[in-house]
Length: 404
Image (tube, rainbow, N blue to C red; front, side, top):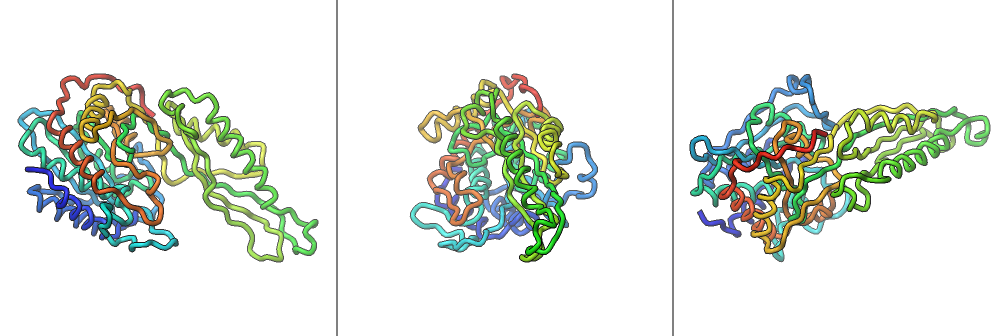
């Protein structure tokens, strides 16, 4: 089957048109199943046992109210005893936000060589590109290729965690997140934290009789900034060292006070802590607690837990992906590190070689007026086709450089 850019654009637009904010992915997965069937596959849509997953070791946490967790598997068979290559991509997206979209967030509009809409670059377009790449590689039968289309990546990775509980017999995995066609061999981790600072209420006209929780929080904020500087001092991993800020620490939400004429007696905040490659989540949590233990704040960790991950940039599978993407784009792909958490770590934790490589556009992810260049989706599909046509696990025996 020849890879058709027009059909790829049409199918990617059809998936973007279906809203799939994290926690409500069923309609998008059903549409993706229809697209896979039209390409000649036999997709399997299934529901996971949420309660059972929540009780398993390694449960990655979640932040969205969820009543069901669905996954979709699409398989391209290989010859008997052929190696197994996983492709993994998420269909859940973040909310459109409050800014104006030139095209609607669910428009799937195609204009000027671009596909517009939430999820176009992160990463519905890439999931459809993976399907088309698999279809184009159907005749090769060099390896078995299994696409996991998952839910719940944006709030912790429960979808991929569940998919791997169901089937983790893979030799390697490619996740086509938007990477600018570089090959990600190291990803930072991330922990969600919350805190509370107490004060003493009083009438605003008699504020000296009270103690403002906002004033007390200022010292906490300075301590958080100091901890971020410490975490990013002397970064050891060579790929992470090239980033301007490898391990960001950010407070994303504050809430304080109940009345403008009252001294606030409580402030709550929520944030995200970057976790260094080679560091465990427990070590990162303990270090942040130690940085704040001299201040009047209670700290809690809940929600998503993204461990860091790494694969050697000289690992045979990384070399294979670099070669496939270099051939598809005409430019030598680089091995890089990224400062965000991702599902890559869930494969690495099971000893499965995993890298991420996909289109440019990460700066447009989670933003209004998100789009992806259609030519880049075609390049991605061709890179995946090339990988599927040439992959063999025989040389992929390099060891992973450690979990976490």
